[in-house]
Length: 160
Image (cartoon, rainbow, N blue to C red; front, side):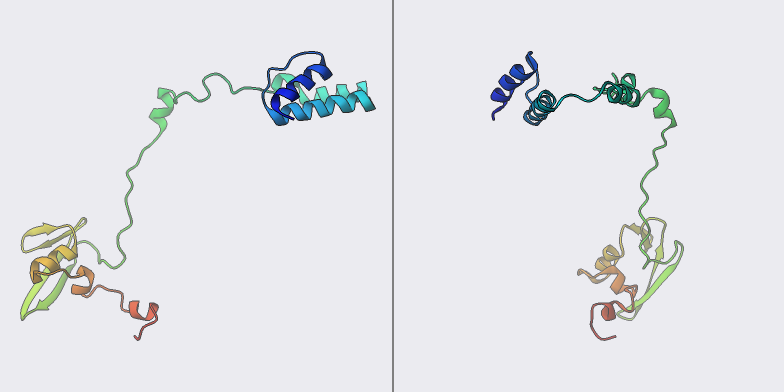
């Protein structure tokens, strides 16, 4: 049956119009009412017990007004917002460590900072940027300074 037909049937069975347009709700209500008319309703004792259990005053059909409103200022003051601090790359040594490398016969040293690196008095965001500065071509910074995990080839299935 269509929703329109169910609304008509509802009016027939209950003797009043419905405001509902929900097909499943109408179908269930009509089926329940037809069953009550054919088989009889529940006993008065069962109805009273159901009322006791339901305690209708505690039931809500709609959410309380303001339930979805923004939190009051007092709640916002109690909320602590902390910045996201990503974990440090485990391949990197502690800040203050000097990384050394000999490249083309020249000794190079890079200081590990809390955020970034220092090489020749300048700060760089990555080891790759320093490796590119030194070689003039793109290098993986961790590989250039020997910080790759020693067993990375073994993990990939290669020889160690």
